[in-house]
Structure formats: structure tokens, C-alpha cells
Amino acid sequence: MTEEFPEFPAYSIASGALDYASLTTPFPLQVSPPSGDRPPARMDFVVSAPPGDPVRCAKVVMEIPIGTGATSLVETATGITATAPTGWQSAITSTASTATITFTPPGNAFVFDQDGVEIVIDGLRINTEPGNVTIRIAEHLVGEPQPTVVPLFVEKWPYRPPVLAGSPNRFAARRWAGTGSLSPSPATQVTAGQRVTLTWQARGDVERHLFTQPLNDDLGATGRDVSTLTRFDCDPVVRPTTFTLRTKVKATGETMYDTVTVTVDTPTFAGLSLTAPLAAGASGTVTFPEAVTVTKGLSIDGELTAGAGLTALATFEAKQNLNATTGISVTGSAGAGGTSTVPGGEVTAAGITTKDLTAKKTVRIFNSVVRISRPQDFPGTDRLLVGYMVQGVGVPNPGMVTVTVGNREVGARGRSLSSADSLFLAVRGDEAVTYDPSTISSTTMFLAWAILGSPTSS
Image 1: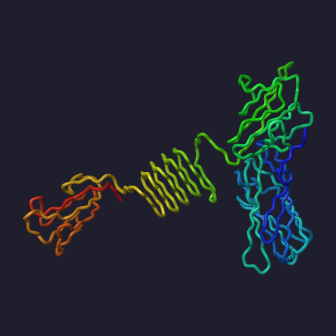
Image 2: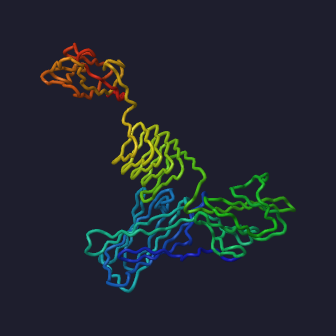
Image 3: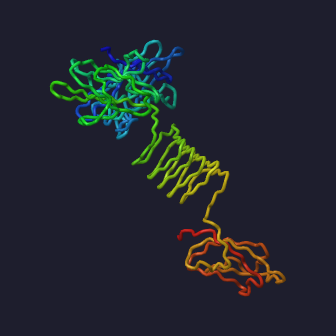
């Protein structure tokens, strides 16, 4: 069987004031197996100056993210070693989140001209989560007060156990090369909508069935009978998929299960069920073309766009912009650090925190307005009231009116409250609203009131 290798070059390039060509061993870099020993990985760097003027460098600092997630490279700095260029010094320090490796030339100055140097980082026990990692490289140039920061992107591929020589199956997923053609490159990760070709070694003494889910002991599963085939061209893959080849020896009944997982860089899901918060990176955009319901918290560092409405039964927060075309409904609170827009819908939430709020329809701050004849209505309820003076027909203006809420005078003597003067009052449930003179009524001068809502007592 042809040796498997990726189609793209085995090295990565990052450029700042200097150029960095990196090569991983193994290549492509794979995550560690879910259990057992974690074989060390190695990264070799060739550092050189681009064509042009020489570059005087005081030191190069590389930061490797530590953690268990997709954006971290290793779970611990333990075991990491560094080999510096001849005459240079290397030092390794670490925190809970970062392993920092510093390479310092003799005399704190090295001129990169025509020749480059080689740097090696070894003993990397890669974590178990596939993803894209950013190694931060800080170039400290002679005479420059601040370093130049260069991101180097490293891709961690899913773990694939080695295929031993003489294996009876040699099950593999390969990149699509067309009907009848076979690519030598593995389809460990593809773009959504691409096809893959599954291959295995021919055997005449077995029965084989193919499945599109993990399987290790269920002989009752139907699957697809591929006993007479050695390849299968699957439909376009739109989400991470695990394929299982079940091989049963006819004579003995011995059954073997081989699996291969194909990840998708832009997966598409018919539905998404969350048991924990959904987080998106600061540089990313989360877009929901259909209606979205979130039963727990939703926190997004980038923009949030919900084309057909957003419903959250708890709380959600967008640290940048929040856009919902047909409305937002939140049982808890909603927050956005940037601008919030709801072009054609309504926003319903217990509380909203945002920088700017643009609504082309109605923004309802309180509950429905209820007109009442006297502020004493709804006793025992905290309420917000707006009232205005109305002069009865043929009734002389009393000129001076005092309105008292509890023991607070909100319209003092000496000030004439005339027709259309208004008051905005926060009234606690245990406070009475009184007038002086008390003769103000519907037959003389009176105040017309509307209750706006019931604020929380403080």
C-alpha cells in the first residue's frame, strides 16, 4: 500500500523581522492517544533574515500554550527541552498556561545576514484535543524598545494508531481524487462538503461491513456489506465522522473493528444541543441562520448574528456586536459590549446591557402603561407613576399645590403647578400620595396618573 503523507509541504512559515521555517516530527503532528504513553514530539526551526538589510537580534522568545483544549499544544511543560544554536543560550520557564523558551545569542546580539540558525524544541507531549495552536514568537531586536510579535500556526491532527506490518485490514480514509483514482494523502481533516475514499486490504476469508459511527462490539448493527470491495467512496462529509470497518473471519468467527475519524474544519450540523456554554474566539463570528434556543448560558467573544431570532432560557452575553433580525427573547439578562441591532423584531429580556441599542420598531422599557385615577391605587405595590395637572372646566387655578409622597414633598408651596405640568414619581408600596390643598379633585383641579411599572425595591 502506498505510504500515506499530506499533500501540502511538511514545513510551516512565519515571518516578522525574521523568517521562521518549522518542521514537526512526527509530521503531520498528531494528538496523543486518549490513554497510555504519550510519545514526545519535536519541532525544528530554521531562523533567517529575509532578503535585504541585516537584522540585529538580541533574543528570540517562544511561548507555547499549555492546557487540555484544542488551542493548547501540551498539557504540561514537564519534559520539554531546547537546543540553542552554537554559542547561544536557552532557558525554559513556565506558568500554568504557558511554557516560555528564551534563546539568547552571545553578547546579546546576533546579526542575521546570509546565514540562518537552527533551533530545536523537543520532549513535547501533545495533548489529546485536535485543533489549531498559535505559538507566539517575540523578536527582541537591538535598539528597538518593543519586541516584534510573530504568530506561528501549528495544526494538531487527530490521533491515528500506527498500522502494524502484516495487519489484515489496513483501514484508512483518503482524500477524494475522483472515481477510480486513489490519493496517497490521508483525509484526517477535510473541508465541509468534500468526499473521502475509504480503503482496506483485500481478503477473501472474511465478511466486512462498513459503518458511519464508532463500533466495537455490536454484531447486530446492519451497516453496509463491503465484503467484495477494497474501497468505498463516501458521500460529502459535512461534520466530524467516525467510520468503522467490521471484519469477521468466516472460519473462526473472530471479529475485528477498525475505526478512522475524519474531522471537518467548517462543520455543518442539522441541530446543536449544548450542555455547557458555547464559546467563540475573539476573532471569530458566530452566525445562526435559523432560530436558536439556548437553555443555558451563551458567551461569545466575537459577533453574534441570529438571522431568525434568538431565544435564551437563561442568560447570554456577546462581547462585541449583537444582531438579531427578527427579535430576541431572554428569560435572564442579555449583554453586548458593542452595538446591538434588532432591525425588524422585538427584544424581550429581564435586563439588557449594551453600548448602543438600535431598534427600528418599539423599545419597551416598562410593562404596559395602565391609566389610574389616583396614585393611591395599587396600595402595597412599588410603582413608577407619571402625572400631569389638568384644570377642570370653569374651575379657577388654585395656583399653589403641594404633592407629598410619604414624608417627601415633590411639589412644594410657592411653585404654581399649572395645566400640563407633570411629575415623575417613584412610589413605594407603603407610601401614601397626598395633595395640599386637599380640595383638588375631579370637580376642581386634579392630577391624572398612569402607572408604568413595578420597580424592584432597594
